[in-house]
Length: 220
Image 1: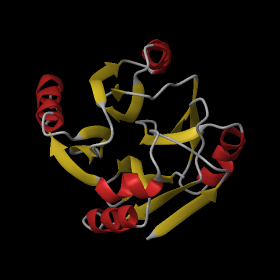
Image 2 (image 1 turned 180 degrees about the vertical axis):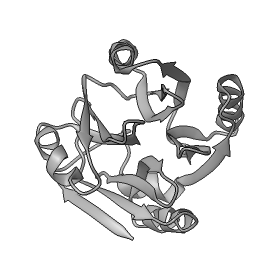
Image 3 (image 1 turned 45 degrees about the vertical axis):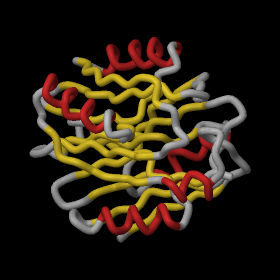
Image 4 (image 1 turned 90 degrees about the horizontal axis):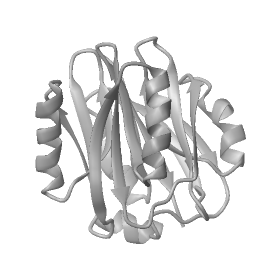
């Protein structure tokens, strides 16, 4: 297992403390259909069970969605959209964030870009950044935006093979600590559960044929 770790200043997100959030949180990663309409139906079924979609990935063969269950978060709406290219993605990200829809996951599949959005009570976004990076250079690549108060909320490997980090800025919100861990397929769920017990909140993930990356944050 490999780990990247970065620590910053004090913080508040989702208007919850680390201990309050972590004590009641549950995280699951489920395989879903790659057919768009069926995928939306699958996600809705889990939303109705009070799971919040917080990440999406396509590893070249299968599509997975990461869900969080946290009674203190009020999920108002969610949506799944796809785009033909990065220009359409950028335009829609701006439009959705202006409506307080929060991008919780991005992945590429069959030449299209899929984005999960949620609208959660008390969450407001004022700016975003999509940073090209790599597994080896995440910490270095994120530092400038991180120092300016941007919060890492998603990781994605696009079909060009490039690694990207989605960053957003929220008023009066910053991260106390963030990290990305790499696991072999099959060992990730146990590690996620152990990290949640230590106060880390999984907020994004990406996978390949022989690896799973999970992005975590901690808050005060």
